[in-house]
Image (cartoon, rainbow, N blue to C red; front, side, top):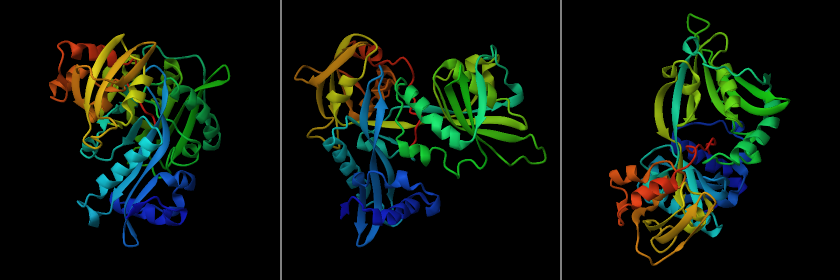
Length: 402
């Protein structure tokens, strides 16, 4: 049996998540607002009276290339009890969550994945990738330091008051940004177990906050007190100069040796701000946001495109072959708008729903995916058109984990 949970079952719902991820969370440290919100969008699979599978959708908004913002079914809390794996529980829950998104009119489903091999078979494609970076404090030198504006350290109680408004401004303009509902700021914005020593810094110009960062400083200094590490947890800025000012500060904190951030956008300007770009070392490139089309006409009709063109896409959807993302779609669009509708015209490109999920935000050129054998070009020249068509001004960056 599977169904949404009630508030009385929330503790058991959380416990199954602990079992699935092999962790033990102190229930007292979990933010009740984030956990208790939208229980009607949860799904629990029961074996007798025990919950053995969990999942849920959150109602989050996604910014598309061109600035349109669409609602999404944001999948989270996916866990199957280790004793109940390989029984079809995950597929049953994912089907339910997709159907929930379709019923509510969400054009897409999104998620952040704990493992990279799970969600492609459910029609999700990598929609944004991020870099994990390291910088050695004494080797970093900025070519043209930002001198305008003021940096100010604030306590978390003040930071949480100014950060939401600033984030809302950035979310409205940044391709791939995922919204943060009010409960986010009071709870898992910076979990207590992620950084022991938290600090908040804001950057202001003429009294207006234009950027903020949240970071922690490790207390494992070894024999040298200045060997500590600055760990950046969140950095949001409205302008390139605001972002640069924050990085200048984070890379020059006394009694520290290294600054790290586990998820910065692929097109970050930071290395080009420095006299030696090699001093921003990329430790890892990994996926972050995954996207799965639910309503293709609504999704593709909402975004703006890099060129004025027309494409016909034949999309395959193994999860919902009788509808959803499956079908043939005519997309006409450009920088000023677009429309998408089902059509009987001959297809230009043939691809599956997961690949379309990777194209929507401009993550990858279509030609790259085609060379990997994931797109078939039915009309000569269509791949080149798709490259220009789906190109985005900025690399997608979702900011938010969920």
